[in-house]
Length: 461
Image (cartoon, rainbow, N blue to C red; front, side, top):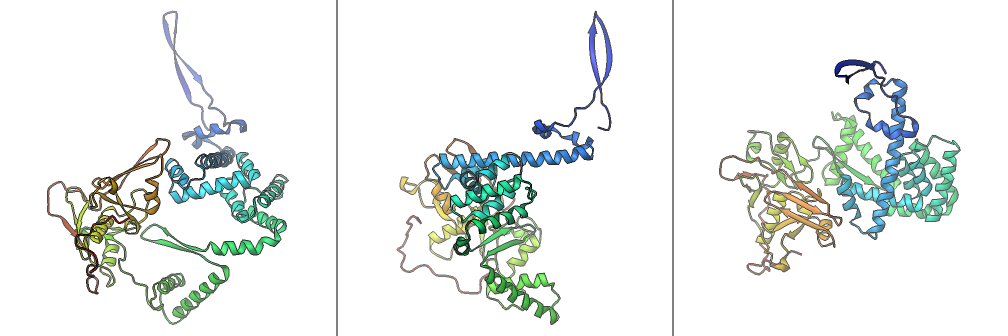
């Protein structure tokens, strides 16, 4: 340590008072046997020398690995107690403060560690490697039988303990596990490949600064062929004078192909999802309050570019000036459809996750079979997952559309509350509702269903 603090003590002896000074040496860094004490260091870290800092980093890695092992065992136990319910991830996500998808991945990883890879789990508890490294072993052994997975687990553990490679190197772990899989189950390679191909998928991941990433998990030869075609077209355009970079060209060509547009032009899409925008932002009088459904807040100038795109759709949404909550929407179909559209504009997302409201179910907040009316004030958007969760024993989901407040109560009685901010800013003085425009669609307005009976108001589920 670089300096010694001075401690002042007040002493009283025989009616006489005196002050004495004592030099106090700061405590040494925690020993290996009590690494958890490192967690209590805060500003003291600034006084550590280089050797002590390296010790602190090692202690942090080992404690993180042990915490991952504890979490895995706890999640696997919860999965067992709930008899494998699909809602285990929801309950865990609320406590872990994760998205449901992230919690689901952790639950699956935990079950795999407990049931299929016990040696790997013990190594984590010993501080050898964290969940990230363990996940590589899980991925490689995912399509093996339990017996073969445990054999790979045991042999890999022997190699790690023999010092064959550094256990914290996730790439080495994956490669070593893959070689063991080929040795232990050579005949299962074709079956594993077919299973992996059956799991092909596409995933949309919202990013920052109005960007998102589209993941395509495809068979290797399909992905390679697709990339070769995209790269070829990008280089052709670049060689003919296009000023975009190759990365920009590849991205634009990919988007144009997916949208069915010419690959030589920049891809152009309209607001095919709800674009919420206050009138002031739409008229370039301000840049606040714009939000893209399923993504979140976006800058005013970007929102205006989307709104003025010829392919976008103009709709009118009237907003309560006191609360900023949408109250009405122009109708172009039968009332039930307009009601759905109003709720989609008002709620924006499922109150309990981030699925866009336009892709959610209509849910009666007061059940229809208990005399709950079918109306916007008694309706809300719920994704299919949370719509079913509402009826699960032990769960309770409440939503107040007026305050945009959602409450969820888990089977253990834990409360979690979430509130969305209103689209438009709250006004302090009464004023007429503001209209939120979207670009008009050039096609004719849809007409009501001629076969629908007048005043039809059947529950939509």
